[in-house]
Amino acid sequence: MSLVHEWALAESIVLYIKQQGYASIKKLRVSIGVLQSIDKEILEYALRELAHEYGVKIGEVELVDEYLLLKCSICGFEWSINPGEISEDVREAVHFIPEAIYAYYRCPRCGSLDYNIVKGRGVSEITVETHERSSPT
Amino acid sequence: MRLMSDPRLLRALKTLSGIRHVYVVLSSKGGVGKSTISTLLALYASSRGIRSGLLDLDFVNPSTHIILGLRAEDIKYDEEKGIIPHRVGLLSYFTIVAYTRDLPLALRGENARSALRELLSIVNWGELELLLIDTPPGISDEHLELIYALRSVVKPLVVTTPSRLAWHSILKLIEILHSAGYRELYLVENMGNGELRYLTEKLGVIYLGYLPYTRQIENSIGSLDMLLQLDVKTHIEEMLVRLL
Image (cartoon, rainbow over all chains, first blue to last red; front, top):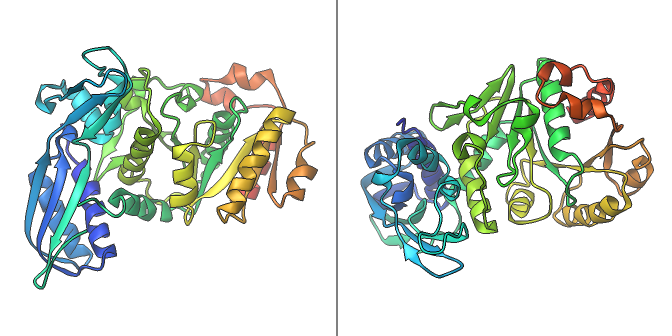
């Protein structure tokens, strides 16, 4: 699987940090949903490269997995999927567009296609710690 | 802590701002020919050497690939710091069906909005002169996202037929677009004869032209050669001149 989505994701994060007015960061903490099978090593590399390109200094980078939680809108059942157990072609589709999951999975209890990705999709939190202060964005 | 805004929107704006003309093809009424108009305009532009793109944002009922004669398995994306669209001749093309295998996809509004953000932030269009974004019918989450969050980089292109029902619905859409601050709006009259020109211009909307009803378009679906040889092609070319 080619994992180039990380570059686009990293650029979104760096643009966001810059937009929030940060030029020098002691520690960057990003929570990322596991649904998209983001390669954290590539993401950190891309973050550092792009931060340099955009003139943002970044010290420590912490990338934290967010557990996947799905909830059926019809019967209320909650469940999770281990991305490692998804077939490779579906995993690649979901890697790029997480909502592609709705083409392949139904609620395991009632069979409904109407369920929510409660947690575990995309970037849910970015926390920036500067040398002077700690500031969740 | 929750994010104050979605970081993906920033990259979406950056990517789209590199394109000279980005038109969001809209209609509050279904069945008026948005996908056909979007595809024909993009196809004719690319056939004349204009760097053009077509983005199908109708996740639930995508159809531009059918017009272009592509099966889901024919659509391949290259990957370089994001996704490089599929090429149909000189046309850059993206549709979600490559990822869904054209299986049914039922998305609630928030999921459609999220898919839209993801897609706009990861597809690298390069330096296009023209991008047409085909949208599903109606005015829902995806449309509001495009109309409001991306208004600095997109221009609305409204498609309607002369049907009184369609026109009644379109008037509301135009009012929403005006209230969102758009001063430059375009309208295409599909399956018509030019009768909407006066009414359109009276609303301060730029009338791009009309496409007469012809069975030839339906019969040409799936064949690029036939689509590029339509009897009504002068109508399409005149619209392009006004768009570029």
